[in-house]
Image 1: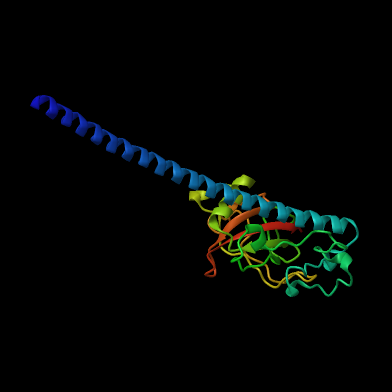
Image 2: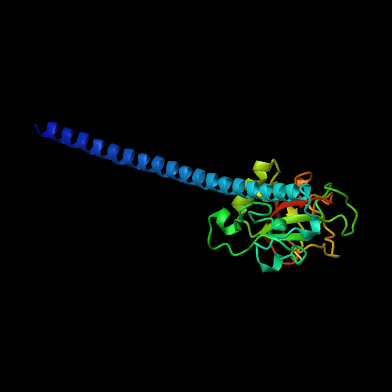
Length: 239
């Protein structure tokens, strides 16, 4: 009888140890699955934001092109809805305002709104000092600079997804490297005399983000001038 009791105790202990081991295994599986789900969810959220930025950038470009086809001069285009610094004095009525129901008809959305991030403090910026390689002419003068819609301080995760959607290579799992993007003064009807010496998507493999060559929209990492920030760009007018 004593042997029988000891045998029962031994079996019970074995079952307890087995149950503990099984619970540990299940906890590990659940933890790994939960981490995988969270990671997948984060990637999907970044992709949604990236797609939203690309769609809006393209909508602004399409609106600008349609306004010009309808007789609005390039020099009269007004982006005042972004902020007062974009107010174009050449524009004398609502018909030349891009973000006005009587003009371009496009509803204005801030970068923060598109990113669903109220803490994002940077506004859109319409720039005239940069060239996008092989869009229009590539001479180093301000008759060849593009009208660009820029948004800076884009989250890295969103930047990488922008490029994946666009079929742009992210080297070493980071955005293409761009020595500098010049914001300059906001566009108010004329182009700046300043020209960025580093083309976006140019042939310099170190400084000119060649991975975005031929792309009218994309995201690059600007590492010059102490900026170290991710820029989304959309060509509005190529020249």
